[in-house]
Each structure stands twice: as C-alpha cells, then as structure tokens.
Length: 315
Image (tube, rainbow, N blue to C red; front, side, top):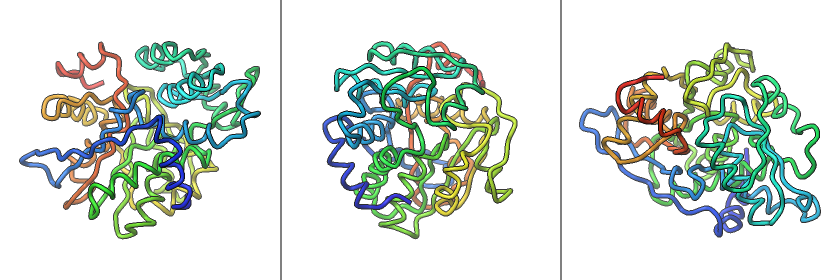
C-alpha cells in the first residue's frame, strides 16, 4: 500500500504536467448501477500514465536521469516517459511488444522517443528484470516503481473529491501499478469502498491469481485490449495488490468492444480497449449496484481498429 502522504505530495509535484480529469455521470437507462466515468483519456498523452511517469522522474536524483530515460511499455507508459524526457531535454528509449498499436508508436515518436520492438516474451522479461540491455539512462519501471504508483494514486484523490461516497471503483488491470495507486488512496480515505479490477479474458492473470491464492501462468493472447492482460501477475506486485482488491473480473473481449461503442455513441468518448474494460464489467453488473466509478484509463486506439469496432467488429 502506498502512503497517503506520498500520494498527496505527488498531486502537487505533477500539477504542471497532468490535468485534473472530469468525473462524468453516464446515464444508461437499464444499467445495473449509477455509473461514473473517470476520463483519463483526456490527459495530454491520452492516458493516465503521465501521472506516474512524471512523478517517478521528478523524484529521481537529477544525475540519474541526465543520461536519459528508459522504460518498457505497450504504448501509454512509453508516452509518459517520452513526455517527461522531452521536458527535461534528455533522450528516451522505449521497449515495446511487437503487437503494440501503431497509434501509440506514432505518439511515442512524435514526443521524440526511440522505439525498440521486441517479441512479447522478451519484452515481458524486460519488465520482470527492470532493465533493458544496451540502453543507458534511468529505467522507469512501468508498474512497480513506488513513485509511479503514488502518481497513479492521485486519480483516487480526485475521484473522492468529486464523489465522496462511491460504492465501488473499477480499475483496468495491466501490471498492477494503477490498481495499487488508486486503491491505496481510496482505502486510506474511504475503506468501505469496494475495489474491483477488470482484465480481458484472454489474459486474466490477476483473476487466476486470486482464484489460486498466488501468481500462476495463464494462456495470454494478444487482442485490441493491448493495455491490459498478461501471462502472469508480477511476483513483486502480488503482495501489494492482493490485500487491496475485493474482486478481479475477467471480461469477454466482445463486451469490451461493445463498451467502446457505447462510450462513443452515448458519451462521445473515445476509449482504447483497456479504457473500456471497467465499463464493460460494470455494465454486466459485476461491480454491484449503487455508485460505481469506472476508470477510463486511456484513449489511444488505432483509428482503423476503432472504425471496425464502431461498425460491429468485436476483436
């Protein structure tokens, strides 16, 4: 669990980079709950990752970041680190999986980042090891860095500022950094609020770990929900995540595509696959009734893929 004081300090530290995003009520007549959307897709890089990346980089000693920044990411953390590197005037090297969407790769390059594509297993091993061979500079871990998690926790502070009495918060789960950050803030201030995670069923590693009581390998398959899902919960994250989560929800990819369409049609919100996961889970009634906050984590989706989904495709 991340300390509330660290999260409060992060809110001040990142104020010049991240914006305070709105909490929007989504009015769906037959919804099983009163659904609210935390619109992190509206951040300058189209994702919540600017919060954690900025906080972690600014916490690091200047000498450590002077040679540049390095991370491993499917795309959104890459943009956060590339943004921070550009602001500091240092290079950024980003390891990405081969299936990373072109929309995210193009955004990294616009920010001046250098992309290194790796097979999925090699990319995952960079995250596990916390280093990228041959790349000099400060490695900003996309998940388990405490500065990253504290920056992510500022989302929880904003949710409770705008809606003091939610019944549940649903968070898309990738590596666990977003979940630990938000849940730490919410539990410190409103311990009665339920915390749920949402993953695609094609890589529901946390759901499997919660069922087994420990991290286990799952059959991961890449889909358009590229910002969430993995083959295994990081061993370092498991003891942090497990005590904070009331339920880990595995969501069919077709339901995620339907949530992407609904967000566009009813709220005029563009969400990537991971960004629509929480809403898909809530619309299925799996986060309970009452006031349910769904974190729309990002909106960086290939326009061609978005067009397919809006015209009825599911994957």
